[in-house]
Image (cartoon, rainbow, N blue to C red; front, side, top):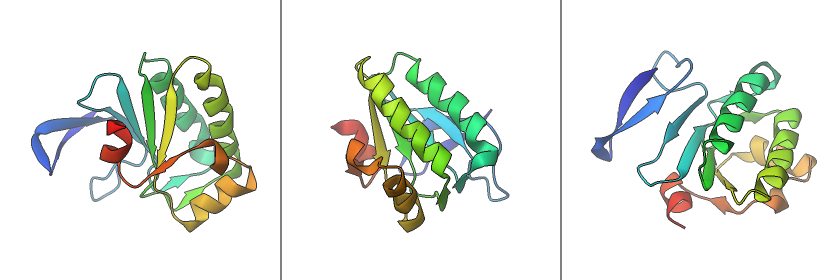
Length: 136
């Protein structure tokens, strides 16, 4: 596990699990927000079939952590597989019954296309930043 400071708030630390890219960015990770009951999942550059199981473990961990809000940050995600998109639909329906809100941030054209193909887009409200998603 490595720590990196948030450049906007140097007193905050973000804790990442899993590997990083050569420039230090997390490939796929999770960190807690400073606000209580909110977790942020970082989608990394690709959420493909090779990372589906790892992503599911991270998602399940965040959803079972007692958090009231789980944010999936897809701003740096260039590719989202159909199966991962479908798992988001399942997660949204399942956790909604437990009072947990799963929110999505960003996502480029390819990500939005995958979400459209499996019919997931209408299930989520989209946010432009993690700060916006965590303060609502």
